Length: 181
Image (cartoon, rainbow, N blue to C red; front, side, top):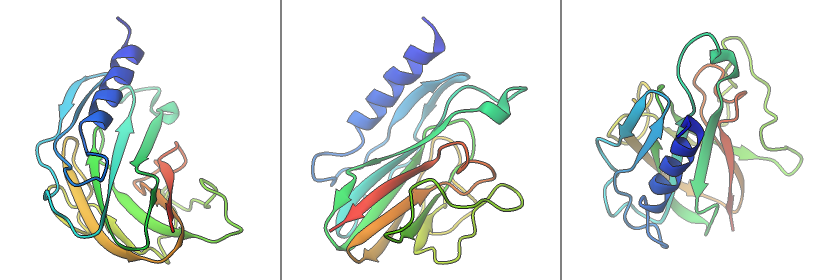
């Protein structure tokens, strides 16, 4: 079996077991990638406030000569929640350190179109919060592979861009939209 079907199978398994339809249980998850299996070593508390959103942070393949073309993904479930308290639990299912940053999207802004600056990062000015503490809430040094971090925010109706702001990760596809109504 080639690596791609294993990765796809792992993603499907990871996403199917992370949360129920109302998002109340955000347990551990796992997936296969080019260098083996990554299993979540921690999970968010079972009863975070407000609407629950699970975010999967993934990278495909392995480190090496082709790293510049390394495919990365950020997936969110559900993609629409009611306004008010929203708890985001981000699980790093990849082989690299990741983080989750929440940025508002203005009506004129397109998803995935933020400018990156030196070091391959977007400016976080206007960020509403982040989940970047392995096995904990809020800001940290980034999520280690196999760990989960979380943050609870009070979100007004609108569009939000969820992104990984580790160097060059945004440019490689690590962003998704969350709609709050």
